[in-house]
Image 1 (cartoon, rainbow, N blue to C red):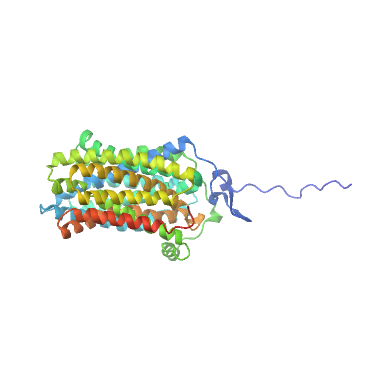
Image 2 (spheres, rainbow, N blue to C red; image 1 turned 180 degrees about the vertical axis):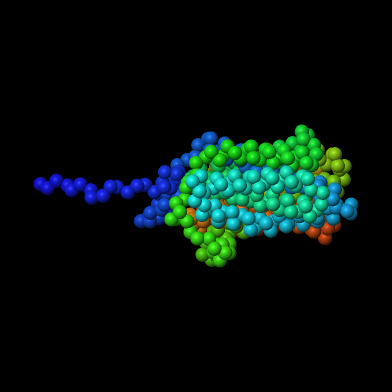
Length: 447
């Protein structure tokens, strides 16, 4: 019997990405997938989730506290006229310009991170760079004494925010298995609610003053993001990097709803539901001041109480419903119910415009938006066209979250001014929420 021949060559060395990626695998029968692009199957641990949640807490505090209080107060002090409509419209213009930056920054940062071959990984360089740009812009924003200066540095701050959050969001698709994404996505939305109330308490009770408030948010942002930079990040081998040209970049902004209908319906549903929520929450300070006749001090106290109720309900809903959607393996029904709860909050305030109704509305909006954020984020990761472009595609999806928040103040001011009251604002908010639920019902590839 002839003995077996020894191998003529040494076995090949492992691919560089194989040791850096959390998992390797196959995305379709018979097709080998590079480790860096493989669907993850190993669950992330508690320390990973804790670092992820802490990073998002810093992000949301730095982004939402200016939107809710610091930025409108700063704009109001710089507007020559004293009518609140002029103040809101100016604030809306500042926010609208930042929204244009977000439309470009989200997918661009995602596309660049998809192609980054740094030895530190694809996402971590952009997480760090985005955090630093965001923080420095906030510091300089606090020093501005003109509307032009405020507009420029808020636009830069939003660009940093988009760069940072695009890379953070992409880590869900990179490292979290499908069966855990509802839970992990809950730790994107829960910090949003906590960030609002902590940020407001910080700049109204602990650190008073425009410059100090912005500086505190900038410092906390960097401190809370740093721990997540120690999480392993898969390295993309240079031979797998696809070229990025102006033409491919522009083409990448368009994802055909005919070829990828689930992506299209999810994106549309997210746009509509986020507009509905933003319209219902972004002008609450003005509703308290001019709709209910509160004085400035009382309005700020009432806003804190309302936000606290909203926060608690949002946290509970995001964690519980996100996890429940994992257990049941269903996403769409939770998104539909979430949109319905948001609509109910708008209808309540339309029919009963009182402070008591506002508190009940905060419960409904908090439950609805908390559920929506966690489950819809998990849903979005399951309808992406290709593993190679996760960052860019999720960047496009994230536009549907950032832009409504940016344009809502101006759109809301126009609605209130045209209708002569806040009732129409809450009616439009409810209508957008309902349309968002309808759009998600057309998703077919995810239960």
